[in-house]
Amino acid sequence: MKFDAILFDCDGVLVDSEPITCGVLRDMLEEIGWSLTLAGCMQQFVGKTVREEREAIERQTGRPFDEDWLQRFYLRRNAALDAGVLAVAGAHDAVGAAGAHTDGRIACASGADRFKVELQLGRVGLIGPFAGRIFSGHEMPRSKPAPDVYLAAARHLQAPPARCLVIEDTPTGTLAGVAAGATVWAYCPPLSPHGPALRQAGACRLFDDMAQLPVLLAAA
Image 1 (cartoon, rainbow, N blue to C red):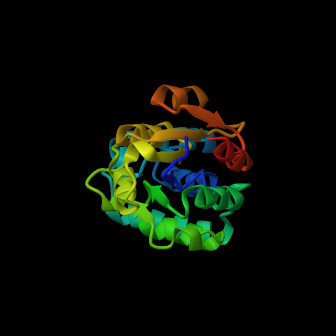
Image 2 (image 1 turned 90 degrees about the vertical axis):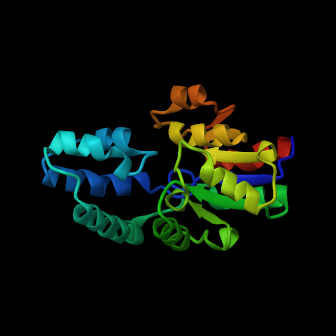
Image 3 (image 1 turned 180 degrees about the vertical axis):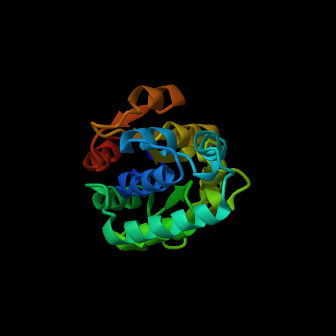
C-alpha cells in the first residue's frame, strides 16, 4: 500500500532525547524525594507528559504538584537537550524516503510541547523537512493516547487518516495513531522495553533500525 501521508512522532523516533529528558527528570524528582533509576524513570514517564503523572509525583513525594517546579524542569530539560540531543541513527534518510514516498506530505506529530519539538529538530538538522507541518499535543484538546494530534496533521496534509502511516515508538503513541484510523509501524530498537506492548496497542509492524524504513516503504 502506498501511503498518502507519513506522520512521525518526535522523541525516540526522530531524536534520541528520552535518556536526556528522563535523566534531568530523575535528578529533579530525587531532589524532592522520589528516587528512581534512569530505567525506572523512563518506564514511568516515556510516552507521557510530566503533568499527566501529577498524581504519581504527589503520591511519591508527599508534595503538591508545583507549577514553578515544572517550569524549572522545562528550563533544565531544554538546556540539556540543546547541549546534547542527537538524531536517531538513520532518521535523516528515513525522513527523506518518507518525503519521496508521499511527494512531501509528511508531518511531525508529537505529544511534547512545540518549543521542545522545534528545538530538537533544529538541533539535529531535521526542522527543514517538517517546516509548517509540526503539531504538538499540548495545542490539542487532548494529547496522546487520544488521536487529536494525528488527526490534525492528517487534516493539514489533506490525507484521509486511513491512508496515513504513523511512525511511533511507544504504546501511548501507537494507541493514538490507531485511534486516528492510521496504519502504525513501531520503531522498537533492541533495548526498548515496549515490544509486546506495541503489538498490543495495535502496531501492525515493528522494526528495530530506522535505516530499515526506506526499504520498508519501497516495498509498501
